[in-house]
Length: 217
Image 1 (cartoon, rainbow, N blue to C red):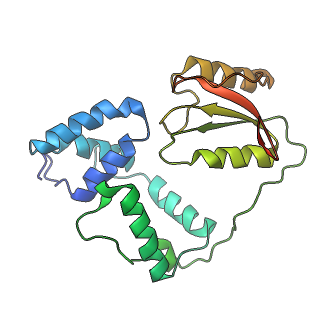
Image 2: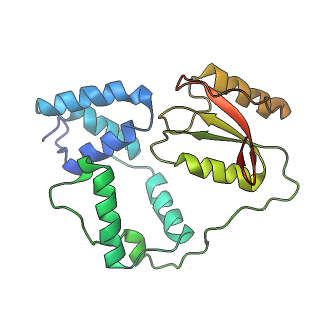
């Protein structure tokens, strides 16, 4: 699908735009318009979203943020070099997100980090920070990128307060929710951790609970 600047919207561009837009409900309306345009043979909206994700400048250049993210990821964890394991992971991913299936089905192709020339320098571990001030960890129940359980685990490891936000966005602080932002502002200005509040039925209101070794509560 050709665009005004001569580029063509590829399937991967449309997929990237879709995934990027799912990070925040504020982007859903633009995504809806982009998918509607795509059905009509127009790819400008989706390409604009993809360009935003890749940090493409008007002059056609790109920032180095994605390259940096890749290099950090490849040295931050042990790469998967097992093709059988890669195939099994691909099956699970397509079962969870079938829209990412391009028609060729599950693949045993290894991740780019399997070919990274520098060995990983980190391993999975629980953080241990002596003398850490009381902290607040925020985790969103329906975060499309970071599992909610990861926030619980981090709060336990840091012996910190867990702020649970019932929502579907990636990150919640300074995202327009006054209840959340007020708690964050109070914490950042004077390290005040709000008392525990009951779980709110609204997906935009938080539940603050103390994280302990045995769980939250």
